[in-house]
Amino acid sequence: MIWADHIVEEIKERFAQEIADGTLLLIRDEKTLSGRVHVGSLRGVVIHGLIGQMLSLEGIKNTFRFELNEFDPMDGLPVYIDAKKYKPHMGRPLYTVPNYNIEIDGKVSMAKNYAMVFGDEFADVVRKLQFPVEFYHLRPLYEAGEFNDVIREALHGAADIRTIYREVSGSVKPDDWYPLQIICPQCGKIGTTQVTSWNNKTELVTYVCKKDLVSWAEGCGHEGEISPLNGNGKLAWKVEWPAKWKVLGVHIEGCGKDHSAAGGSRDIGAHITKEIFHYPEPVNIPYEFITISGGKKMSASKGLGATSKHMSDLLPPKILKLLMMRKQANHPVDFDPYGNTIPLLFDEYDRLADHEFKRHPEPNPDYARTYQLCQLDPSKDPENLWHMRFSVMSFVLQMPHLDLEEEAEKLKESPLTENEKKELQERAQYVQYWLDNYAPDEYKFTILDTPPSDLTLDDDQKVALSKLTDALANLSDWSGKTIHETIHAIKEETGIEPKKLFQPLYQMFLGRTNGPQVGWFLGTMKKEDVLQHLRKLL
Ligand SMILES: [Zn+2]
Image (cartoon, rainbow, N blue to C red; front, top):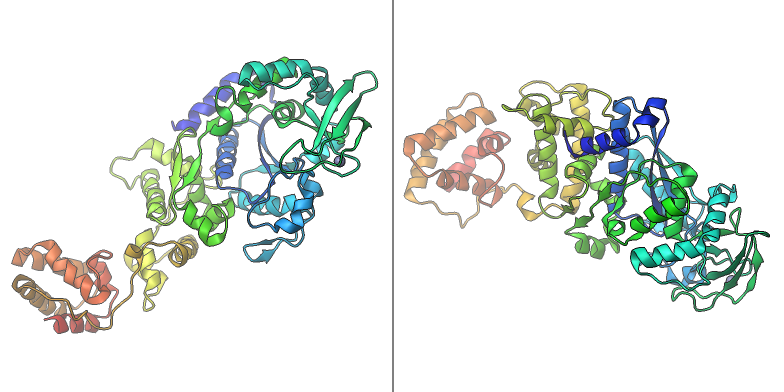
């Protein structure tokens, strides 16, 4: 069992009756579309999507609904947004803010409004992960009156909500505070308005659009009376969160660590849903942050932080899924695209495959399960495919004289299947992208035409390399395997320290003291070139 199996067990226990009745379990997650979506939000998508897939594997009906929230007010301007053009829109609901041909990574977005510039980008990333996710927007639910009942309950229970805020989080709201904001009919802003009374007979609120309610937007001073229903207003988000649970009928919804602390918004939501809306709190799956070690460097070079899109450019979907699920949800994930995190992650994927396909001497069932579940469609049996290791591939791709498929078949010692070729080419795209943008120097190789002039050998090295030159000259089958065996035979015969033998073999071609497995590496070179380099050295 892996960590997610324990969550599935908890869900089965809590909803035993619903499952027996064939009720559709609703899993929900959301993102406010105030800017490009940070990579941390992908962890929520993977956790919820994975739980949904695991429930389906057990025949438990479920649906995963993901909210693209375009109703919150614009309350900040990301650095990559033209502040002059967008400042006047501060405080307006995001869906009313226009898309003035916003450019994302050099491409003009065709999205219908500001919010969907980011919504479209994020949805594309999520679709690649192939979870059966249903996206929905918040605004139309309000307009259709779906929130009318919870709005009535929240306004009617405003005093009790203020008490919950005070008792749970210590936040004191004045007696005339109501958990709802109206879209100002005069200036169109929502972040600047305050409801001052609620009449539950006429179902009207009085409101004022204040100049100085918030520091990031200025209201117009308009006052009036209006119905808070049918999309005229929006609940305060700590009240709106539990309201969504009730309106949509949510059974399962996790949230990031920032919301999960005692006295935090989840805690407030749990009280409000129970005491005001009389709806049970969904099963929570608190999850930790993702930190990007090279994040600062990434922001500096691209003018922004590590976005979900950047991460999906870096990793194929199933390896991205693995990154997000390899540790249990409440453990932090650290990711450094500039270090060796990426090569190690690919290696880990290949190692998990060894456990799944019993190539490992002691197959671990949990590793095999992780491998099965990080497949994009875990309901299908994974296919046993040969993989080229990341570090080997990164070397091959840097060698203009090598053909990737040819080298793969040499290593596999048999022809690749069609699916193996597909996997090979897919991996090559990501390895190349990594080489071009993030690979540290230790992974960068160029072949020298002639051995470096400052390379000197001691007597032991001269003897061993001279014997090796003769032995290699006599090899009839020039392959990584035979070269490897020859080098080891010379090592045994002369008793030379391995390092002293291997280092000059790398140095004469790469100008550095390490590289890929030496026999294989020399096997990728022409025999005449290897002999010529060796003779120049001696
Ligand atoms: Zn106004």
